[in-house]
Amino acid sequence: MPRLFAYKDFAGASEKVRGYADKHSPVIICESVTERDKPFRVKVVIGKSIKHPNAKDHHFEYIQLWNLETLIGEMKLQRASFGDNPVHIETEFIFIPKVSLRLTAMAYCNKHGLWQSEEIFVKVEGE
Ligand SMILES: [Fe+2]
View 1 (spheres, protein in one colour):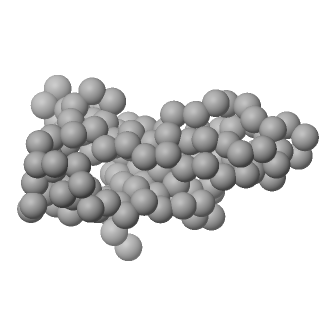
View 2 (view 1 turned 90 degrees about the horizontal axis):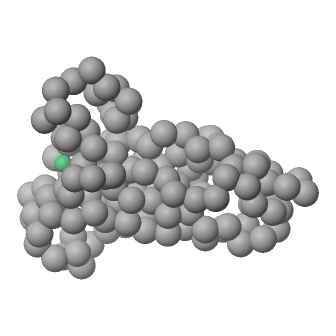
């Protein structure tokens, strides 16, 4: 089982260490209420304020979106598609929910491991 990191685990750390956690942590951006059987858009951004390196030996390889234990989708990243400079990688998932959601995003840095977002609850009306 790989170690799993989350920004909240670094709450008491120094500013430098919290910056390290920030630039690795996926953040979910979406509405908190939606309707059943209607396309729902979820954006995932890596890092709130600090850009992550995008070098050949240090970059993100994938972003996943989960509803509890169910994988909704996965974006595989081609590093070169985002240039060579530090970047806030972001992606969107669009899907049709049937029931309320407890969303978590996961992102994998090839140098610093697997990072988890905060869990986001989305109420699906009409379920
Ligand atoms: Fe990293």
